Image 1 (cartoon, rainbow, N blue to C red):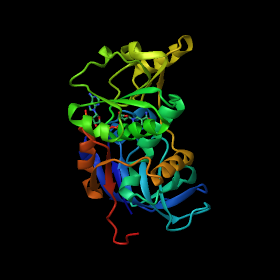
Image 2 (cartoon, rainbow, N blue to C red):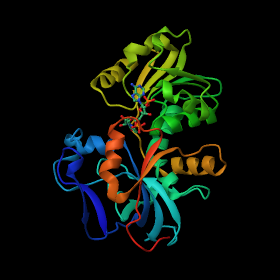
Image 3 (cartoon, rainbow, N blue to C red):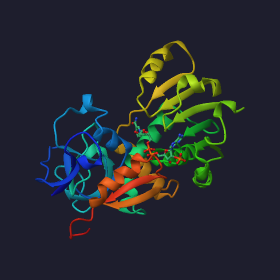
Image 4 (cartoon, helix red, strand yellow):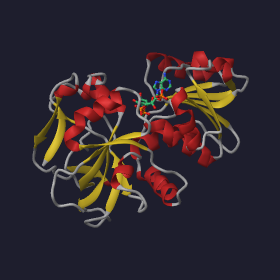
Length: 317
Ligand SMILES: NC(=O)c1ccc[n+]([C@@H]2O[C@H](COP(=O)([O-])OP(=O)(O)OC[C@H]3O[C@@H](n4cnc5c(N)ncnc54)[C@H](OP(=O)(O)O)[C@@H]3O)[C@@H](O)[C@H]2O)c1
């Protein structure tokens, strides 16, 4: 089968598509014929060696954490061959940008019937991140105010919809050209970082969800409510220090590290099936265009998700 790998740390030229054996299954895994793979900034950061202490220097390193596809070998699971599924692999070594992938049964769930494979592949990593950040860490509830920074990207477009679904009052931060886009996804108020300094806002927020990661707890503490939470997706050194100081204050600083679990994927299956949440795709690339797809992510201008279509084999499901 074909699989995309990084042959070294470095620029996109280090990405290669190679031939390899079909994966062998552990007892708790199923084999999936991948139809689409979702790309994420995590793939780019790994290729650049930003997480080399966690991942190690053993090459080649297979790429990709998000997938949608069909069950090829259900192994000991309750799935049947041909079932449509979507999910995300936990940990630091991805392998979903491939024709087939072995995945633990607990990291996938059946795909919503009303969306395409391309749309489904964009949900698991970005969606689970925002659901865990907003609902589980932020405790957002009806009428509470949330500010989402980086609202027009892969994680942010789902964050807006999740926060609205929970009943929050949503304010987004994006560039001026994406104000209407954020509004179309449900934002109550939209702010352009090109036009306004958020520290001059009169409003105080119960949650500040820093998806883009260029704010900090110290910077925004003045616009947090007395028990407000600052939640970031980006593991900068300051957040680890701030998490320690949480012990001594009512306002909290938190970091999300997404975990994939079928209970979260089930939540998305139900919300998407009920048309309460919709996938937002910026661009679909062919598997062979993986370098261009990763370059697009590196531009930090994606409006929603960047997807790879795995159409390299003739037998389509
Ligand atoms: N910790 C975790 O578990 C976890 C999980 C998922 C993601 N992440 C991290 O979360 C971050 C976002 O991920 P993503 O998938 O959403 O990335 P993305 O899709 O590549 O984000 C692109 C978006 O960033 C926005 N942006 C660019 N400059 C900005 C600025 N100065 N201020 C505010 N927004 C700006 C762009 O909007 P405009 O064009 O409108 O500026 C664009 O829509 C990444 O660093 C990723 O690694 C962490």
